[in-house]
Image (cartoon, rainbow, N blue to C red; front, side):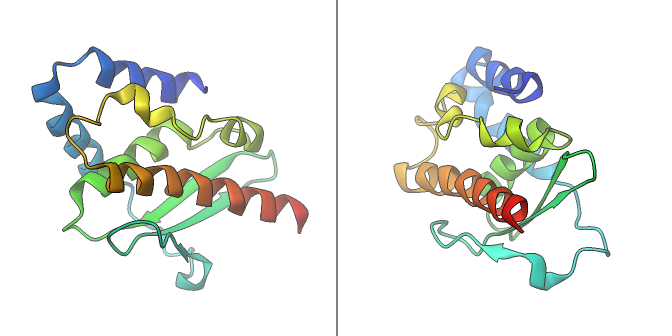
Length: 139
């Protein structure tokens, strides 16, 4: 796993259970706003999420990935997970993103705080990002 993402996972794992949700909400607050150059048509909905959630990627000439997410303010845990992905994977190579374990978030020990349905949605967000990268590489 990419070092930046592993550091975040470790931070969650080492935090007391009572601090994990506030930590996740900090990542929600840190979700990067969508730049104007990104058109709404570039976003794909992640239907597995309970809330309306959309993702888009950019891959630069060096094969480095930038993740963009749209999630309503009323979905702070989902926004927090998106913030974790942005902070941990923005600037990664396409290979680094594709090699990210699908269940990396298990190490964050959020299962005590977040329902299994929401956790599956989190996995689906990463799966959608990976699919978008594969589609980008084949175009």
